[in-house]
Image (cartoon, rainbow, N blue to C red; front, side, top):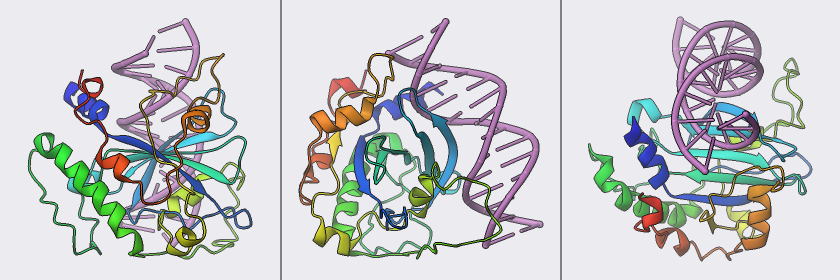
Length: 226
DNA sequence: AGGATTTGACCACG
DNA sequence: CGTGGTCAAATCCT
């Protein structure tokens, strides 16, 4: 129980700003993983709800990867995707051959390594389109249940390709990978727009090669291991 | 029918 | 005590 929480704390977190297509309201977003939404909540100070997702294979493969998607208040075209943990799942059919990640029984010990590997994997797997699902502007006419406005997560759900090649080449610094050193997200009355403001103030806009940040993520930092 | 999403309640942390 | 994160039942969609 508490172990789990410890894990969470120890889990690496990084945020990515994802630009969505203003026209469709969707971006070719997706990391190639399957996410299942398990919650949505309105965050204090934020005008838009935050969606909580976790890997579909959480139960089947014990993949603890989760992510939170929240639309920026100021830039509706920006999606803040906060990723936590890494995928230990083989992603079902698994499209990437280089995934040499052994599914160790005790992820606790191999956690860090796996993280590094996976991050690295993600980084290098940029040009692997994987299962890209084209999003139809009109998937189902009958379903008019949700307001497309707040449904920013429909984009996130698509989770097909965060690393859209074309997108990369055209917009090298769409993502800003910033170490969430600031626990940030305390939506106090005074400190609104927490993660957002943080992102903008501290935001480190890495040109797309700087993902080393993730690898160098202070896993050993005592801060993450109370 | 199965799987995914929605939504409100519950729980833990700060 | 308030806020954020997760759970779980109900609902919806494929």
